[in-house]
Image (cartoon, rainbow, N blue to C red; front, side):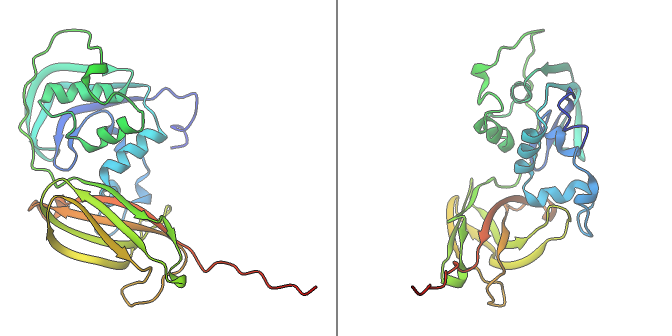
Length: 277
């Protein structure tokens, strides 16, 4: 990681043209998922970097590309992978390589080759919103040999969870304040929402409050209130807390959608003593 942060380093991402059961596609931007040190994410249930899925796979991919912008992206599509990738997909020979200076542009061309809708891969949507590249194919100049798109067989991916946020983002439960937790899902599914405490230097996750357990809900937004208390009814200490949203449309237990938002709990306002004249 220290080398990757060096201003003198030229970063090249060499990914594969393949499908993925949670992100739908793994190309040059998601290829950065392998960069963070494993030790920060290992725990007893999710070894190595798999624990990053619980903190929002698409959000993690975006954060990595913001931290380590790619100078040149290359996607190897000599042999691609379709279906239930990356572990159980089917190899497909494409005999092509896609490369360019903008990773998001490269990945968008790859989506066209694979027959995937441009808005279907959530981390690419996020990347465009943050100014990392084009939002569609209209702004991309494609050079080189002509190609014929071949629609890939796609995996069944979990529901898309978006806009997990707290309003206000900081509140004081000791003063009776609450915060509104909102999120949105793209289709009818089952969701679970919890407040947890995480660490930037440890994989430890501490359960604080279950706002609601698995339950059916329609597509669209949902709003929940949190009063700053844990499951035992105690007001939590000041600090930053994660809002974890899980969603499933009937996929396997290990293939739920995950997204995370953040909220800060603050203590009671400081009152200055009255000074006599």
